[in-house]
Length: 279
Ligand code: C2E
Ligand code: CA
Ligand code: CA
Ligand code: CA
Image (cartoon, rainbow, N blue to C red; front, side, top):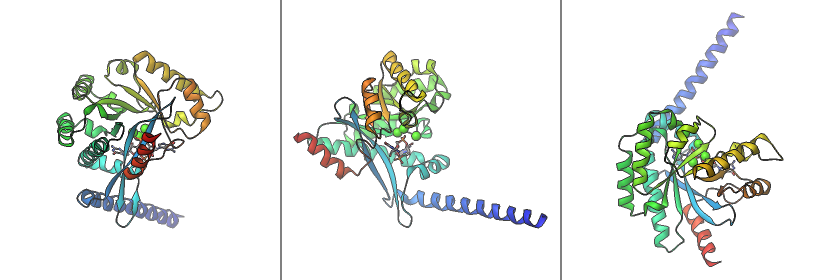
């Protein structure tokens, strides 16, 4: 009946209203989260596929909300991207990650790369290069140990601007990787001219590895692509022995995934790096 339809509509709009309120509340507390020191970074090791040795880590942000507990970046990063806070948060991440990596090196641990995610909004910030340069100076991290992860979505923007920004970043001495490779806008002609060092195969391909699936064929093509362009290839989301064996047999360079390590706090990684050192 009409009456029912109206109720449905009211219910639906009040549900939407709730969602909007929840997001508005989160956005408000997001503003304060940095000064209240509610963000933390976890670090997920990236290993040499053949030896299993840790060669780098990816910094992954978590929000320790005073009422809601740990909130995953999948929830609040998209909000921060929408309201522009991503630049502020992204700078905090960059600074914290560089500082931490320098601290580990000063402790005498084997130097490893620190990979940091850059959102599209950060990449398009005209001050990006200066920001990275200043943070490297301030934290005294050797730029060779910083890697910036960008996504393919940048490939849809002005090619001159992208390549010149990437070149200026590379002039600082940092390396660049393409995250979630193969999931968005992939253009081979752009890949050819983009000065990047590494591609990261998205986990939805890795997790499809099983006895001759299409995903296996796609991964082989990506590995071949890496060879052709002189790029390192890392596979994300490796969770089992079978996936690892396939990637090793096909000469994948690096692996990141729960099979080896989950993201962890700095202190936990420190213990592992110390253990590695004593072997
Ligand atoms: P991403 O950059 O693709 O990061 C990898 C995600 O995959 C992480 O989720 C990680 O915990 C998860 N992962 C790694 N190995 C495995 C595995 O073997 N199996 C499964 N099922 N998952 C695995 P997380 O930490 O929840 O981050 C989600 C996304 O949030 C990231 O995806 C990235 O897009 C974004 N993000 C995280 N930290 C930052 C940051 O500091 N800045 C920006 N801009 N984005 C961030
Ligand atoms: Ca990433
Ligand atoms: Ca990824
Ligand atoms: Ca992603």
